[in-house]
Length: 215
Image 1 (cartoon, rainbow, N blue to C red):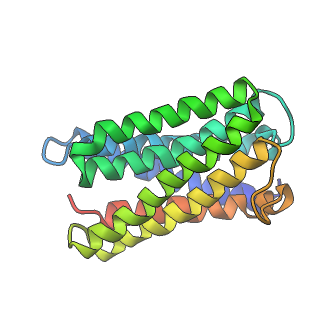
Image 2: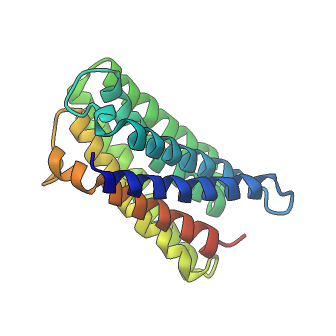
């Protein structure tokens, strides 16, 4: 990892730390408290941990092409962010489906974890795209619907942009950790764009949620 990537990742860490502090503050505030901020906080906290880990230890911590623990954790962490993010949006705009959707996402996370630790490669190829697509479509579409229905400001559309980016990044990492490649996202390509992708994603997410999101 070069110095520029480390600076980019530290910028991401700062952004996510600020966003995490604000989402936790909103949850603690009796006037704005909502379960959506718990899920958003999980996503931002994961972003923060990922950014710090990569900035300190470099790309080797990913273990993309190995069989060690770090390799197995990549797929789980790459899933936790979009899954938490999607659940947060469902809990905000479709609260009656919150528990069901959270159960589906937790089930997906458990199945992905099992596929990695039990080395069920064929099973992994099925469940990765199914659950990542579900989370991705949710993260991209719900902000669009919220803005269309005037439930949030236009800046909230940045959440959709960030959602698209994290979905592509997450599923690409998941495929690589399983020893496969998604489209043209080879290991060199992913490592070349990963730091900027994480920065743009976290910035879009934070800006859209905290500036454009309705209380």
